[in-house]
Structures are given as structure tokens and as C-alpha cells.
Length: 128
Image 1 (spheres, helix red, strand yellow):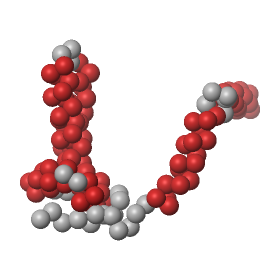
Image 2 (cartoon, rainbow, N blue to C red):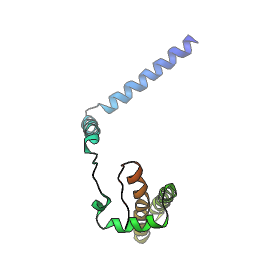
Image 3 (cartoon, rainbow, N blue to C red):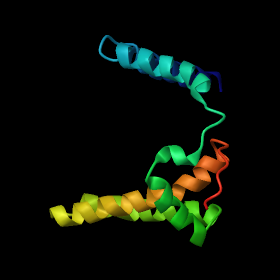
Image 4 (cartoon, rainbow, N blue to C red):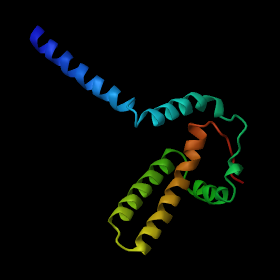
């Protein structure tokens, strides 16, 4: 048992060292530091008095979708629409297919926007 544990620990140590050397190598040190700084600043940036109207003209499209279906169903439908659109973009060879796929990605994002804003960002907004 000790033999297996020792070999496992050696393997895990090698993997951890390679991961650390990859994250803190000369090439990746800058991006690692930027990511650490952004993650440190993120809690400060959370706004408490934000309104959905800050999204501008996209608010009308988001409210239109939200009035028909709401709750977790809307979030799931938005994810499914985006996944199908991403697959369509990846498999499309024509510009028209890519443009239509991008439109459906936007519709999926609009469908996911209301549940994400309400649940994760705690922004309350009533569509009028």
C-alpha cells in the first residue's frame, strides 16, 4: 500500500509542479497577474443600484421574450438555442448561415439575460 501511495504522491507532485511552471512561466505570468487583479477587483465592481434599462435598446427585446416565458424554463431554452446556434455556426460554410447563427446566439443571450440578472446579479426589474 505504501508503494502505491508513494508513487501516486510523486506523480501528483510532478503534475502540480508542471502546472505551476506553466501558470507562472515567463509567457503566462502577465495574464496570470491580470486575472488575479481582476478577480480581486470583481467584488468591488458589483453594483447594487443597477437597472436593466442600462442595457439600452436591448431591454425591449429582452422584455418581449421574458413576457412569454419566465423562470428557469427561459434560461434552459436560451442555453439550448445558443448551443444549437453555436453548432450551426461551426458547421456552416456560408456567410448567411453564420449570420443567422449569430442572430440566434443573440436571441439565446436575450433569453438567458433576465434569469441571470435576477438570480445571480440580484437586479430586480419589472418589464413594463
